[in-house]
Length: 147
Image (cartoon, rainbow, N blue to C red; front, side, top):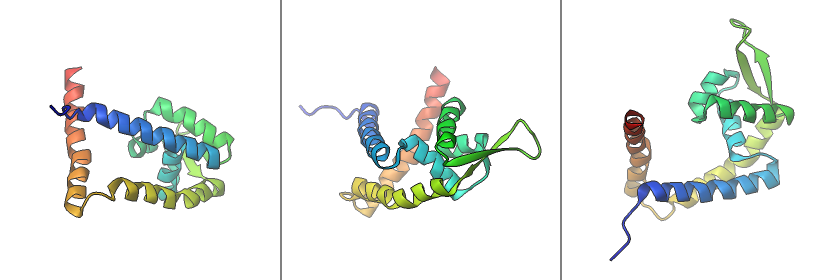
């Protein structure tokens, strides 16, 4: 009898394997982790954001983001400025060195996406996209209601 499809476990295993390999490659070549790269991608696409907006675009918690931003600042990839409306607010900007990392790694990310999807036709890719966008949002809502 075939093993049952354990999507929750399989997603976790796939996530762990992919990001462990990505972290290792990025650390070796760029000195950052994928979580740092996500922040840089967000700022590359929309620079000068408060941390609360980076949280929304990255999917990371504010507490996790704070340490990652500290590291990016120390490495010289970003800079912080005080908000013009509220001095307590920090606005984050990507520096030229941070932009250079994204310019170097964009093609690599596209290759990863292509590799993940290469065995699926357009209809299957559409189902995968719908699953990841819709089903996971519904499940997160269900989890939040039950815990």
